[in-house]
Amino acid sequence: MNTPSTLNPPQPPGSDWTNGGDALHFQHCRACANIWYFFRPFCPSCGDQNPPVKSSLGRGVVFTQTLVHRAPDAKFRELAPYKIVLVDLDEGFRIMAHGDKDLVIGDSVMLSFITLSDQKIPYFKKI
Ligand SMILES: [Zn+2]
Image (cartoon, rainbow, N blue to C red):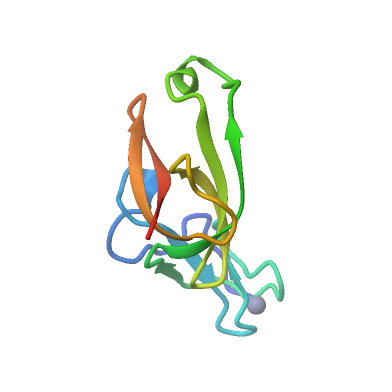
């Protein structure tokens, strides 16, 4: 019999950026070793329940990038043009974030955070 799952899995020390903290959390599966970014109460690959949550060290490589000239709303217009990147983190998952305007595919990057209109967002800088 499966144990009940929770929509809010236990968090490691340091709050995730989506909750206002300075950490980037991900999950991994003890049963099949799958790694993923968006929180789930189960492994999306094998269905194992209550996967642990870990904190990323924030190091990765730019998978792809684009420079946005037409911002979707007023709060992003103050940043335009701004860089959006997809970064493959060393732990084995990919996230979308903002980054330095001169980032190109293959650059090694480190995670930081910026605040935009009282909202913390992930931001990558070249290392
Ligand atoms: Zn699994």
